Image 1 (cartoon, rainbow, N blue to C red):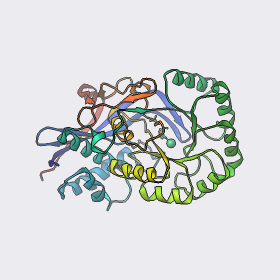
Image 2 (cartoon, rainbow, N blue to C red):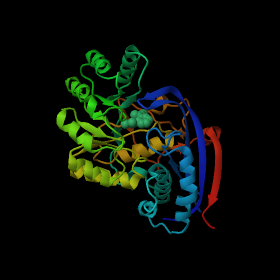
Image 3 (cartoon, protein in one colour):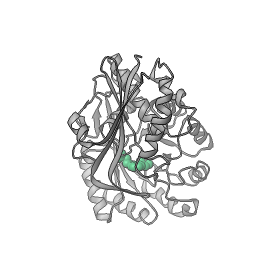
Length: 372
Ligand code: OSB
Ligand code: MG
């Protein structure tokens, strides 16, 4: 690929249209990095970091992203010549973890490469789908009625599956009421690591609810107890937080810790590793789907590209922009019709950046030249 001339780091701040509550906390707004990689022809590749301001989901934050990107990742890029975006993952491997920081840079390089080649990002990574199925993730609400109203709206909007966040005290009773109201919908639960094996009786009761899966019931760093749990329950276990790499994937599958894997580009350190995990799961008959991290348009576009790979057999969490943002930073914003997103066919991520919106939400920016 043609060399990168400069990298711009933009810190954005955007308010969510509605608060989003998980077992670990409530999000009202989001600060995050947008990375721009520019070449001598003026092509710009875009990447988005999915790290949050607080280390709730994993250990990374917006501030650690800045440190890792500026002090390690960009200096490493300056000392090398990239032939292809797949060169980025091995280059960054000498730095431990910090996968979201790495994925943001790698994503901007993948987009730049696809624009240089004048092909869609989906095509560049080997994706073929022209439409993808999507579901929606519904946060913890104040009342069961509020949850049921939100589920009803989501079903009416056509989402292909409904994911409901749970935590101890907001689980079997609430899900039973939702199931009674909607006997036939594809429905699943996500615990974000809120349980231990001490809760096994509660988790066994979920077997009566015909859930597609339960996502990350146990500790964020566990694959052993999840294997014990999977043997004790019928509901398929899906891992999210516990999977950071292809190696983690291999071990979890060998142990029987899960039957399904949620792939998040940021959590696994970029599109290259995400694709490898997808390929491995496909070869081992493990269903995968693309997770979400309340992304703005750039991250959403990368998720859409990843989901075009043929092993993404289950609907992901990439819902419409309007469920998260009053104004997104891409044009057009992501829309969902009958539970599907039409994959754009323009070069790279296939969405224009709304430069006015981008400027409006930028709170800090810095451009680093790659020529010195
Ligand atoms: O566990 O998938 C998760 C949001 C924030 C952090 C973690 C998760 C989530 C979601 C929402 O479930 C996914 C989305 O709608 O982007
Ligand atoms: Mg999850």
